Image 1 (cartoon, rainbow, N blue to C red):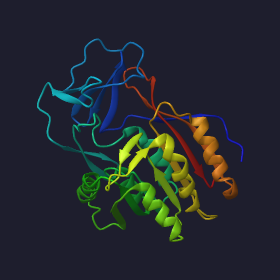
Image 2 (cartoon, rainbow, N blue to C red):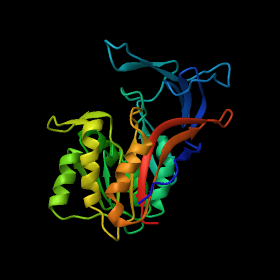
Image 3 (cartoon, helix red, strand yellow):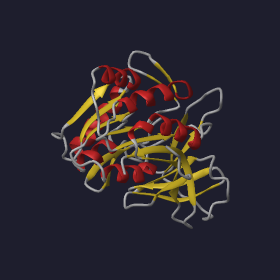
Length: 289
């Protein structure tokens, strides 16, 4: 299977989220009524607007300290509801600098929703379940896997907030690689798979995940769960040292026997101030069409 040219998937602003402005290594975003400023090394240009007035700013720690902290310039709720379509979910100022979901995933969500009706879908590293609920809303039956019990509880809470607590979703706290390997041994198959792995992480029993070491074998196991009737596999990668072309060639080789199409490229969000694109991640995806 030959790999096509690199493409760019752009997340456009919506009612409850937008990139207001970015530059000088920072970005200013709106999450509902709350606006925040966070570090963004990719924003190497000058910002469009002279004065930023966020409700909160994330200040990264030094190399010795690690992490970082939020400074609130005005009071921000511990959590507040946002929506995309019919799906509602909680946003919050997390210790990891993000706000509980990743808005640049919007084009991937839309791509999968078009193929989700009556589909069996596995969401690995599913986090707080926004993607899971959007796919469920489109008619899919989900297996949602995350190593963090707190994240899975957040997903269940978002399902309740969306009025989707009774949907066919299996919420599983487990190591993604171990769970996928067991699914292969069980002879399971899926119509679609979404995986959004971190650069580094730990499973519920202390299992260590390192993207550069463990991505290729996990992706190989995921492809074993697809067959001639499967519809899609979507992988997003936020580690800047990896190449979209490299993971594109990997998935192209693994899915050659299935036919279909492999796309790879960059993900980006569109700034509202002047319409420029801020890159956020790389991706590769396979689909039947």
